[in-house]
Length: 165
Image 1 (spheres, rainbow, N blue to C red):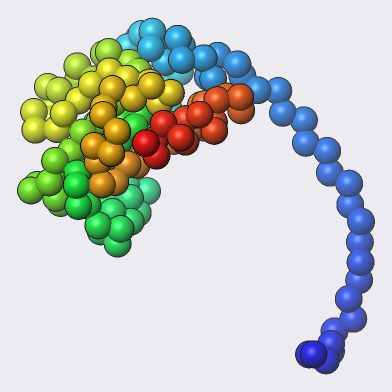
Image 2: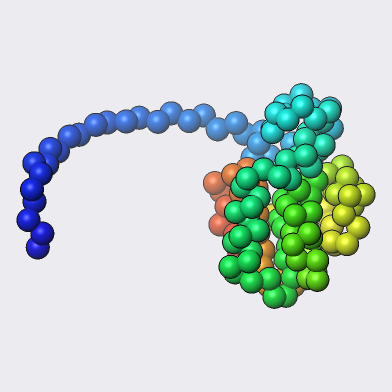
């Protein structure tokens, strides 16, 4: 046992966190029907609409972490991004891993159409994290970037099971 050289002080602090969830973000219909002209901007990079804004975020530093993690995990069997939006992560993955099959799905038709224009190689489909439009075990690696935060607490286990299948 290590000898304590510092005096420890026990403090008790009661912290109450009040969070009123914004139900609209947990509602798939919000994301499916989000118009391109929606004034709520996610990245605040001056783009004309949220889809362009997402696309222009492709060099955000967190995407380097995703590339690094994919490199460490390996990409055998292809990569699926659940909640790919306009394809910002997929474009970076395509640049680094051009020889592997990439796929993405998102609930928003406009985001998928935009991604298809920018990225002709990946398989891109409209789909929901609770019912992915791919066969079981179609990919060696599945990633999601800030998608699960919009899944309600009652559906999170189901979403994780769907990603794992």
